[in-house]
Length: 96
Image: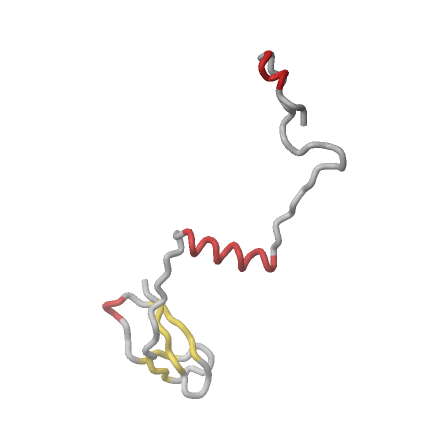
C-alpha cells in the first residue's frame, strides 16, 4: 500500500498508509489531533534489487559498519599451498 504525506498546520508533517481507493483528503494529526491536509509529494519509487541500489546501500553502511579485514601473519601466505607438479617441462621454468 502506498504512503501518503499529510501536513498539520500547528505541528509537523507525518505519513500514513492507505489503500489507493480509500485515501482521504484530510486526516487527524497523531500529535495534536487537528485536521491535516494531504500534501502532493513525489512518489517513492525505488529499484531496491538493482546493482546500483545495492552498491549505494553498501557504501552508506560501510560508513558506520566497516567490514573487518583479516590479514595473515607476517611470513605466511594467505592463499592455498602450491601444488607439486610432476611434469618435467615445469622443472625448466624459473622459480618464484
